[in-house]
Length: 379
Picture 1 (spheres, rainbow, N blue to C red):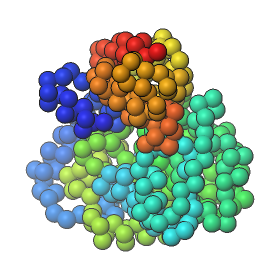
Picture 2: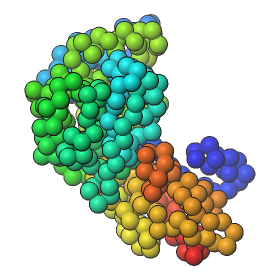
Picture 3: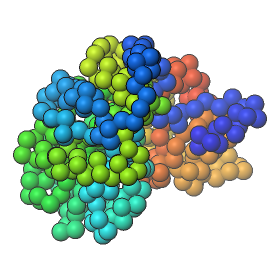
């Protein structure tokens, strides 16, 4: 959709991008200054595969400060983005034929990485009515003797679901019955939370050795292009990820690592200001969406997306085009309203479409006026 949007822009068409998967903010100045200093100080050589010692220590400081989790540097592996951290962990844990449970909707890369590892994806379908969260009953019913891994995100891309402590505790009760199952908890949207403090499933100490936390700097610090992710895991898993990464990419970018130390251990004011703006945009987006007939929408608890059910429009037509599925819906909005979105099929939920509110308030309002006008033509 981003590619198609760029092609239309090249033709002079004003396309408003609501497919964005990154903050529309610049990296905070104090982090950029740290990178400039690292260049001047000649941090320009190969880095350790697992990351500089001070960065791994900084991750531990952050986990204790923000999550009250105790980790040591040997539990931490830094990578070229959280996507590589995910790939490392999945490839380290999953063998051919192993089953990996993933609640839908999910970030599209989850299932593809499992396939690369020759594992079998077991989708557990959540519903808008249940806040797009898997229930303990669903989880237990999906586990078999072949289950090796459970993979989820909170806050969730694309749904915006955020698990609270009680919901995580209920899942933990199930996991205690099945010690062969590891848990990957993707917490990359941790700071973009609209309902309270972030809760990590790693807080349950008896499960901690089976849990791999995935996080990074892209979303919370507006550092998508800097490419820095990390895991916190048992020493056994961390060493396995280090071995894999050593053959793929070796260590992450040296300048990024030095900037990341400052990001993780100093002033979070720019992050909180960014979240305040996302909060305002979320409120306005929900007002605009609720005014559109037939569009059912869960109010996101985190991240910067809405994921409405648009199936009301399936089978409708403007006389020349008929909307049969979410892909048709997204293409119709792109070509008619000149607004880009992402079809729900990519996330394991074909009834929905993802819209981002990581764009200016002006563009958000312009986009939803266009969307409303385009959808009013469907009968």
